[in-house]
Length: 403
Image (tube, rainbow, N blue to C red):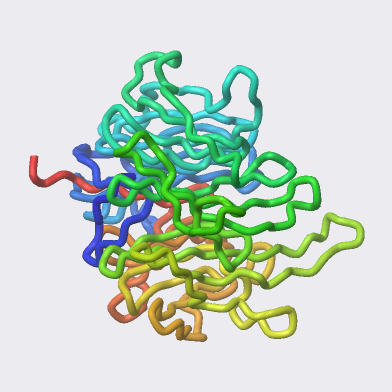
């Protein structure tokens, strides 16, 4: 999760290029032939969950032969992955509130598991671990108004948490700003916050990106001149979900959902199309609506729940239509033009990522595996790599070839 590009296009997600070397155990490949993941310069690490939500695991895929090892970290189902120089972190979210460290050389061996809750807290719901170096990382906690500064090398839990960053300036009446993603770019921690009103049906307020200088005492950087608002960048789209950084134009791209339809309320409410894809120029903190998600009468792409950026003219997003029904679209991040023919249609999709080799990885829950597209011509290069359970979150580890 440091600011090192891992692919040809210098896209930075909240991941780290890491040193890896191991031959993983046998698995079933996309053609159902038995195969073993080979030693590779690159691996994908994917959190998975059972269809009934009763359990979860981690799949590790070698990018050398695209074989998967699907039994590494038995857990509960709501989990995501973060990585650093040689490890991956299995983050247990809602009702788990913990983080577990594994080394890629021994992906089934737990090194430690620490709580994400302080003694006086509950339901911290951690979302990301952004690693700066061997002894400093930032734990993004969706359910609390503080980021934890932690030491990922700590050998006992009492040494894990070393400090905090206060986000309370961004919290509404419910006192929680809902921080859900972060990027470390040039020693500056960029924190995405949804700012939902939990006391009013989780209605979105103004979303923000706050920036903290990690080389200068984690002090917050003022991005605007309005004394009546927080220091961060106010977004024009509502309920932001993910963000990607493209170094070639120094721009962050944010996908925002708007409001999902709520069938569980009385009365039920329809989807609100107040999201889309928004760009933020980090040279001056200006924002621009790149893709508009439309409105209740004309929403051609559905709700934009995730974005992946290859370069300044080629990107992808998930367009959500309804439960277990989403499309994958390609678009131009500069012009905003969307190819209206989906690459993948009417699938249950949880994540998309640009991989270290420049291809598009799709967490295809409808078929319990990973579908990969060649981004040169937007055709499938791997129809399905079986992950056994349903894939949640995709991250990558890349071998340090300089050592």
